[in-house]
Image (cartoon, rainbow, N blue to C red):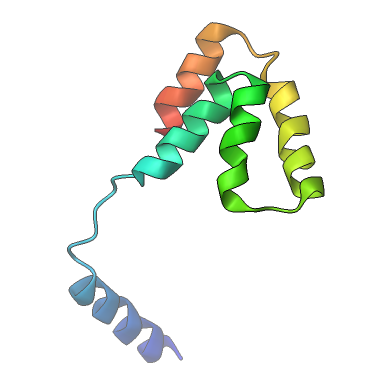
Length: 82
């Protein structure tokens, strides 16, 4: 089993060497919106995913908690996540 794992890791290293660490622009926009946009605007941007209403409400509940974070900490989170 150890030999298989070693071969797998070497194969992945050789085949995936071109991978980069750049985040998807849509992901960065959504995270920035989650932390910075008003709830009404963010709710409209969630509509593009077609999620069930109870899932959208769960995200908005979490957003209501993050809206209480200070601006300096919110900016630090944006810098870390995107």
